[in-house]
Length: 242
Image (cartoon, rainbow, N blue to C red; front, side, top):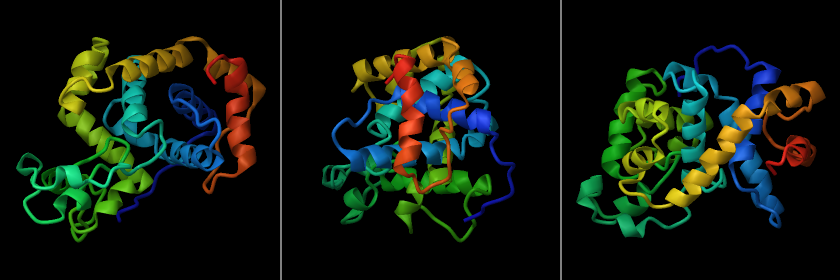
C-alpha cells in the first residue's frame, strides 16, 4: 500500500476530532470489548483526518457535521469496519456486480462507509489507484479486507462523498438527500438526524475550546488502552454529550 509522507496531526486537532467522533456516536455501556474497539476505530479515523482536507470536507462545520453523522451511522457507531451480517443477502445481486458464486459474502459492506458489491469494490480500486492511495498491483477485489485499513477506509468514504457531490447538499443542510444518495433510500434516517444534531452541538457549543483548556490527553496511537478511552470520555460527560 502506498503510504506517502504526511505531517503528524497536532494534538489540539486530534483532541477536537476525537471529541467530535465520540460525541456523535452512541456509546457501548456494558460491553468493554466493543467500547475499546469503538475507540480504536475513532483513533484510526483521527489519525487520518487530514484526508478530509483533500476532498474539501473539513472546510466548514456543516460538511464535517454531516460527514461524521453519516459515517457514525454506517459503521454502527464506529463499532465495526465490516458489516455484521454474512453478506449472503447480496448473493446474485447483479446490480452490485455480484455475478460469481460467493460474491455476496466476499464483497459485503466494509469501511466506515460500508462499500458493498464487486462492482463498487472494483470501481473504488480504480479511484484509489488514481489518487496513489493504492499501488497498481493492489486491488480491493483481490483483497477486499484492505477496505478496513484505517487510511483506506477514510479515503473510501471521502471518494464516495465527493463522487456523489455531497458537499453541496451538506452546505444546504439537506440530510434527507444525503441519506438517499448513501443509502438508496431513507433507512435509519431518524438515527442519522440524531447524530447530526449531536455533531452540530459539539461543533457550535465551544466544547473544542473547553477541551483544550483542560488539556485532556484524548488522542493516542493504537493500540487503545483503557486510560485513553476514559480520558477521552470524561470531559464529554460534563459537556453533556456522553
